Amino acid sequence: MELRPLLAGEPREIEGHHLLGRLGDGGQGSVFLGKDAAGRHVAIKVLHARLLTNDRATRRFLRESATAAQVAGFCTAKVYGSGLVDGRPYIVSEFIDGPSLHDLVFDGGPLTGGQLERLAVGTATALTAIHGAGIVHRDFKPSNVLMGPDGPRVIDFGIAKAMDASTTASSVVGTPGYMAPEQIAGESVTSAGDIFSWASTMAFAATGTPLFGRDSIPAVMNRILNAEPDLSEVPRPLRGVLEACLAKDPAKRPTADDVLMRLLGRTGEQAAGATRVLEPESARRRGRTGGLLAGKRRKWTAAGVGVLLAAGLVVGLVWRGGGMPAASGSVATNRTIGVELGGSAGPVARGVAAMAVGNRKGVAMVAYADDVARVVRVWRPEANGEVRTLKYGTYTPVSSMALADVAGEQTVFWTDTGGKLRRWRVDQPAQGPWRQVCPSGGARMTAGKWRTRAALFIGCPDGTVRIADMATGELIGQEPRAKGPVTALDLGGGQDTELVVGTAKGWSGTRGTLVPGSVRWLASIDQNLVAATVAGRTSVHNAATGRQLRTFSTGKGGMAVVQGHGHPMIVGGDGLTVWNARTGEKLGRLLESDAWAPILATGDGLLAASVGNRLRAWSLVDEG
Image (cartoon, rainbow, N blue to C red; front, side, top):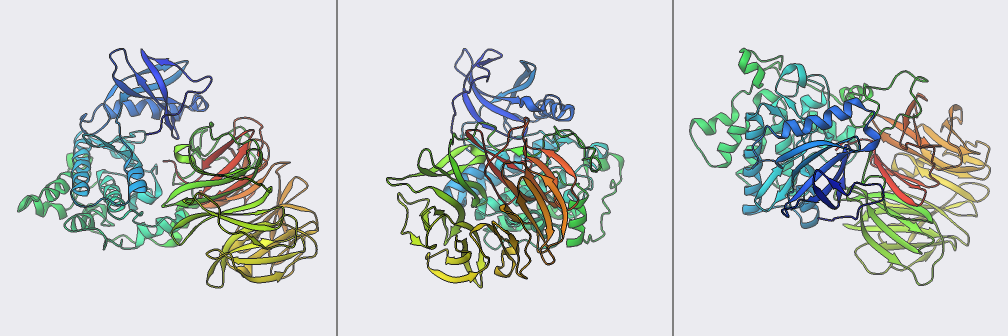
């Protein structure tokens, strides 16, 4: 587990514990490693300073310690105390010296044999204790299971609530890839929801991949609602247990007690109980089903997911000001949104020339070129850790960059001011062979598919777009697209027929539409809409007709389009302001000051930015 040095302004001692360093950051706060006079190590979680004015976030933070304290210590990190330091709430808990399940699988691959069986039994035991204490966790997932030396521990009770219909209904929270169908649909969340999330987590541990995919949030949620999961790679007898737990109807899932009995090989009535109808705890006490519509088959459609996302029911975008956004024009400009990964202390990078966002086994990664240090680096924002660094002997400034998985190997691509395309397989100590793709000068690049091949689209100063195969670097196509140097380009929907190109004279689409002005940034919103930045203003246009629909003041910094919260969002300007790209509604901003970012990069709901001399990253679709 990586321990990072304390930064200026961070506390050095809390409740008699000397702080040794920072273990990590989450949506709520930073976690520090402390040591008391007796030499005992503890984990101390401190609420982010930026959330002190958010009553909802503060209440939730304080509720976490009270909730965790109700559960048996062998299942969770035991809470030792809580209080205030410099006006900020903190929680002191047992330090679990081990990685999260997510990191363990990411680094070492799927679990097998006895290791997988012990995980399943240990976490099912934890859920039995949690539910026995009358608590619904509501965010059970791989990153909330710590693999301690004495077995797995379930952590993060920040959104857990008591089993009561009045507190578990209508507010949808959690992590989309591990939510139960009823959780997505905004219905009452009972212990049955935890069972579904537990099964999804065990499937991840057994296969190494998220059960419902890792692509767009709407696609993942649609599969959870409607598709039967593929458990063919999960060994028996665990597979049979997971099948029962993944029933779409919560009333048909087993309880945690039943799951544990089946995992332990019990037979007879106890094992048969794994398929009995499950009622929420509060309903059992009242002798009714609590409105779960038991016995009725549920039907959800992709359109339903769209309505849910548009209605803002899923907490994919965290509203720091509390509640949902007001009508257009009434949102305070200082509202901070998004979950910052790794906190505000990302890697120092004084000369970022280009960035790209990708992922490795579902974990977000950011590649960037530092022209001052003359290096290309890959950064993992979630853990705020550097993955690899490539240092040059002879360095040519970078003009654009892409990050992609090529044949199972994470690969960074970039173009330089000499017109060359370079690539580096991150696991290799040196870059691969380069190729001259433009006659001279800087080039702009975007990644996608050309016909059936994964390809890079490279805009050159002569106005052409060269197409290179990602796997080989070979040039496989060329298209004359515009008159004058290409200054920006993007690929809407991943198809070459939707390529849009910006030049010093404007941008053009597949039908030859030309919008005047020197284009600095360009981003496809969907198949019909394109955002283009000219002279500090970003305008949204219909790609087929060129008609301007709305404009945003994004200033001298970068501009990007992020898909999240059920709609595309434009990010840019002072404080990295966020707007709904379709309606023009100002949603808030990512920074607490008027700072701006010259370079932005996006992918999978993640936004990376160079702010001052550091890199920072935000998740706009996932709280967790």
